[in-house]
Amino acid sequence: MNLPSAAMWTDTHDGAFSRYPDQQDFIALAPEFGVRFTLFIDTEEEFDWGKPFSRTNHTVNSLKGLAEGQGYLTRSGVRPVHMVDYPILESPAAVELLREWMAAGACDVGAQLHPWVNPPHEEQVTVANSYAGRLPEELERAKIRALRDQITAKLGKPPISFRAGRYGVGPNSARLLEEEGFLLDSSVRALFDYRDQLGPDFYHLPLVPYWAGPERRLVELPLSTTFTGHLRAFGRPLYKLAQNFSNVPGGLSKLGMLTRVALTPEGIPVRDALEAIDRMLDDGVQVLNLSFHSPSLEPGHTPYVRDAADLRTFYGWWDAVLNRMALRGVQAASLDEFLAAVPPPEFRIKACKDKQRSAIGRPSTGGGL
Image (tube, rainbow, N blue to C red; front, side, top):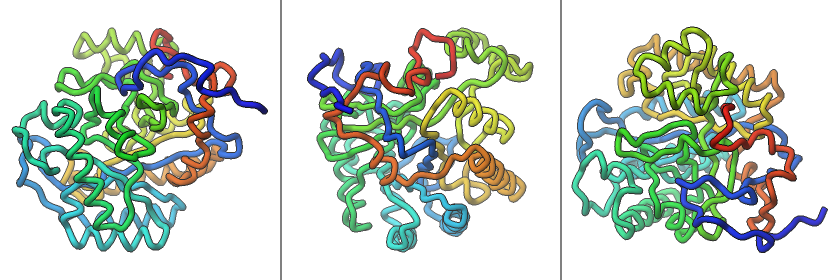
């Protein structure tokens, strides 16, 4: 088949993460890729999530849990991407583990930017400045470069994937990542709006991969979220309206009418996750993108895993999810496998000619996609 070139269309915006993609920017993955799932782990330091951000009040002590988690995933046939931040790279023990797993082909490594612990330290430590995308452009670029170069120096390979800590991309982020040589970003969390926390608004964005950046050479792989429940066909506008009333979203969920479900073991009951997987697959989504924070692999470091019972529940979640994936014929994909299924950016094609069209949706549509 002769694929049309990008030159056949005029781009309507600069590829910033806040903008809904143009039709030709949706990515049609290679048919042989099938339906797969990916796992990007926010591999990071431990800190008190309830206290103000600090440059120094953190540790890197949950490495035993990290190793146990990596072992579980390896036995399960999952090759995760560890999105490492600067404090992880300052831990010789963490670097040794990562180098060992990379050498064995058990994982890949990407970059995760926590600005408050990532040099250069020129900004004040505030909630607003915890989002890299709110920093001055040259400071955001400098932090991206420092993290990239540290990963290259410590692990022997430059990262090609990126995630902003706290999902904190901004108006310059896509362009900067493109210019600094990154191939993939996974910061977008569709159906979430963080503006009340001074963060970005992703609510209107799609759940399927698309090209971002002014040159459209950066793949955006959003974290997977969808709506479940009897009213999911009206999900986007109804949930947006319900959020204006504090108790309404919870009430709709309890009644089985509408629940927003992110594919993560952190705060998401396994029953909801399994239903969300089924709904997304039925909608025609070709890649499910899961995530969690590495400190959750040991009790006491995140709100989601406080004790040994929570940790058993955490692994039980993964047992059930991996079993459901197997039953639905959905295999894990590594970063390299996913990127190999992405056509070159010169072959951006119209989404309406792609079988994923029904899964793309528009902000004005009601469904979870």
